[in-house]
Length: 334
Image (cartoon, rainbow, N blue to C red; front, side):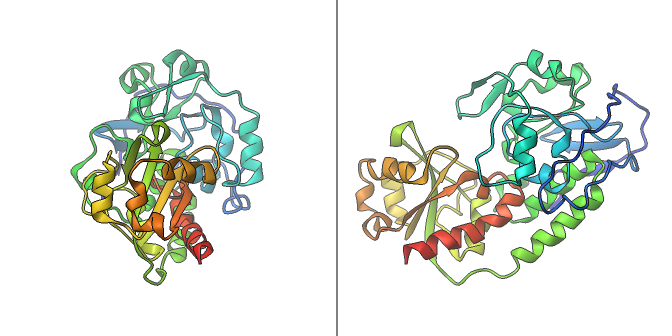
């Protein structure tokens, strides 16, 4: 894959970059022993991101992280210590203890919720943290206003407002590799990126035996809205590596709302409910209370499970752990 398209150019400096010392490293086990200072080799770096060109004249050393979607990749790159402000506390049990300790020391920025439940943070709050890079969904910040203040914004490609056409095609784990390499380039951590990718590739080489069909759903509004994940989402390769076939893989939308009747027409053998807060059983109970779902084979056969959202989408190194976690949940069904 070629998105995001990365190109390096020896450009004259175009924006001020804060020269600030790096805090002591707090990284995941994959990077804890190899964390090093960022390399200035190859800078400036120019990256095409969501149709916008961003340039960093030196490795990002002060990062504002809006939501925590890129936290798995920052952890693997040994860059948790560069996060100076957050908007969300990550779910427990996903990261190294040192990562939680580092983030616990930060005071979350005040945010509001957008229509999809994500964080929206004010420009003033971001500027107050004096970052040299903001990592955020496009609809969570004002990219243009921050750029005018000399602060580049990197958005996970799954959250581009107008994604490149190829991001509407069926996803593969290549999207994880692209994401890690892009962040590695912005952080001056290309070597760490390639090491993390090599280790991750080895873990998804052998798919599990055929486990039938499945649909991944996000349940919102107390069960009133059911949102399947289609072919462009990371659900599709995660399912495939776990032996499941995504019944919505033919859709060119990452996520969309669907009627119970449409889900019934596809009648997946397993329902995988994605959740980002609360406990899995409450998510399952909310779904089972939805009118009409009792007609699904997966409900009749007690094949409804709940998987933590970060194990699938958007593309990250937690997506690589998704198949193993999903197989474990499937095994628990008997």
